[in-house]
Image 1 (cartoon, rainbow, N blue to C red):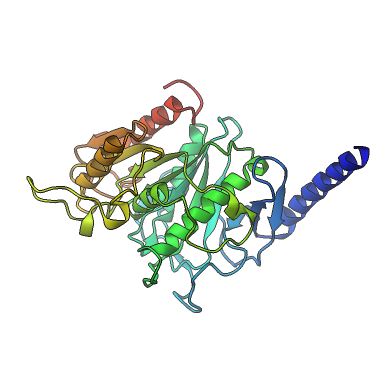
Image 2: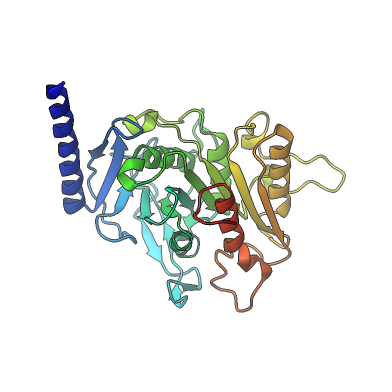
Length: 354
């Protein structure tokens, strides 16, 4: 027994040393667990891409230890970042809001808190599966969640959309990245001081579609396992849908009196009673993501006996409002962070009482 104890202590010390070395020497790191809940974390170092990390040098996490699955060499070209999404971002709401284009090296940008319940939310910015509204719906949102005691990881998933591949679902690359991201964060929960049973997902617009996709397509990975993190369940424990796009066939609501249906990826038995408890935020005047999508999806949750969800429909505010950074006047929808906080508190994911 003494030899076993000494061996265990030695292996734990080695893990700590590896973690320290990786943080000190690499701009990017991929963290995976050798055993899921608490037996230690293994570090898989990846060649650091020359990409800016909003959480600070050495803190961003590269999702894949090598090239992401099913990628085509040279596509889509070099990643770029431009402040062309309006103004109103940043801590003082006076900075340009960044878009990110041409992502082929997906990452997680962590924003961690120590005053929460151990919960974390993975954030998928929108952008029509063409680009990512990184500032408005990513970084600013992560800091909002930090302010209510929830850790956050901003997911830089692959865009633009990749060509269809037979045997894989539509928009397969973002789904692969989302599956990998949840498994990686959950497998690394001890390393980050998180509760592996409190890992959620939220998405805006196309990211809202991705939130629905990962909430219904988590039972089986759609890529070959690359390390022990892929043996960890990748289901979200909670989901927040922010003006989700393309929940309906062709993104168009049925005419009044005609039956409503969901997009193919959410039809049949895709939505089951073990769907994560959910929060919906949508405007009636949204010209891009019809409000009927959220209503139909929510109705399906009710019909299958999924956990009771929180549905927030506001009269106006359009699409892509984020945290209302670009609004010149207050709208009712700008209170959604307070509603989201109460939802998270009610289910034990944020500290305090609703």
